[in-house]
Length: 127
Image (tube, rainbow, N blue to C red; front, top):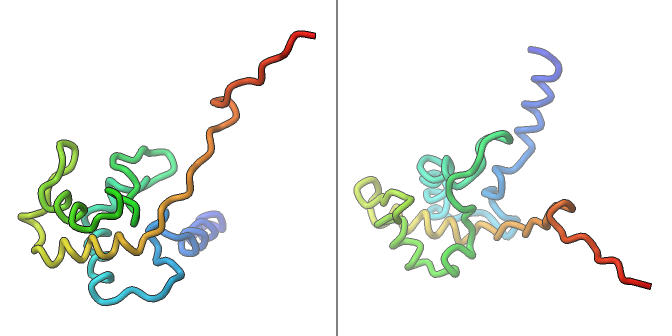
């Protein structure tokens, strides 16, 4: 194994899963751990950016998703949206509730500021 590959693997092991790591507020309970596992199996592929060079299909999810309303989150996971499949035939209601419970532990992502090229140029005032 090359030195660069080994270094890259070490860095990946130290990095959180793009905002879906457990928050510092305490350990997850059994339901939230189940939700984390199911989220990793079915949701992570669309709701995170899997590689630096690839895009992200769905929105980043957190406790603020859908206004933080757990019942609405469960309904969307169950029935889907025009861009997202529903999981009512994949998961039991308790498993869908576990995913929603896990999302309630995920902090909202930091707001990215606009790159300098996207910010308006300052206007020059006449003397």
